[in-house]
Image (tube, rainbow, N blue to C red; front, side):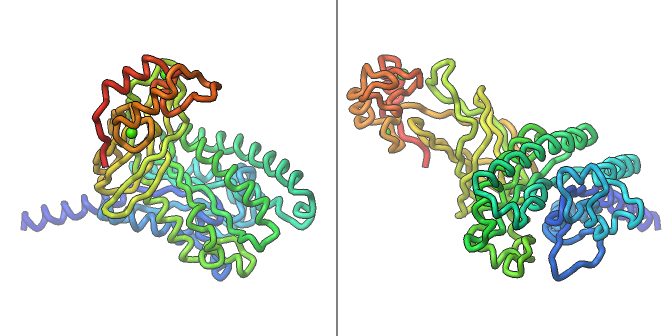
Length: 405
Ligand SMILES: [Ca+2]
Ligand SMILES: [Ca+2]
């Protein structure tokens, strides 16, 4: 009897623990899961959000509570007011006197945290409607240059409002994992919107990516898988930009592919003090036989920040005149910090070993400075813009070394 009671208590505790988490979703129709063949008012347990909540359930053992506050049609501007009629579709809002999404996010966070629950994950996606609402016949009748100028202005205005929105969320939820999907281009080349969308959507995504970095979020690129598959993955064949089920699956797959954060420091052996590092650096991430290329954000001190899928991974980096360095990490259960890499310098010809060919190239460029005809960037091993004895010393110290596979 006592044993049964103890087991019952354990079961209740496990249940309470599972209900202890809430997935909060902020955004527009894509986050709500809109498809033109289903206009039922609902709490938005569909689309990529549903798949993500299911995945979190597989991680935690119990599916988190879902609070999808996304409103079809919402722009970064209407986020702050109640002007968007698409709010009628989300049953988390009252039909009459609904609050703004911004206000609802705040009251939801208050209610969830106040009841002792946690919000470990937040998804946030806004901005596409800022562009979409411009796209009428009059807009498209203008020159592409004019369209581009107006799109730039809209993106700039959206950016300022994204900062305001994200500042508020981060103040309330400093420790939550913030996933920020970008947007795909739904328009195939045959569509009149294609040229301006091809210009504007990457710029919007660049803004979302930059703000994800600023607010310790994880940017999720969703655009590449849609290119050439617009008809298959979206309803654009029926003149509707939203994803089909297969499109939502693609967005979910990209979210999972970026759900973990890997951080560490890259030591660029031999680099001169004051040499400028690029803002991003390309890693290869291998999980079993699958290899993806992913850019990490790189700070001036060499610290990097890379999103990755969960699993046993190898991270590999080959940059210009440094040898390839490959490390293994395990992101199965969470983020990985201190994934440091030391890059060995001296590979002038880029063949991943420091050998006689590198010596020959460095010798032929010896004495040259940036701007000289025989200046060879790959031979300027310390990147001080002159090829001299300092570069030769670096090559000598690593001579005979080969990089990782
Ligand atoms: Ca070499
Ligand atoms: Ca040099």
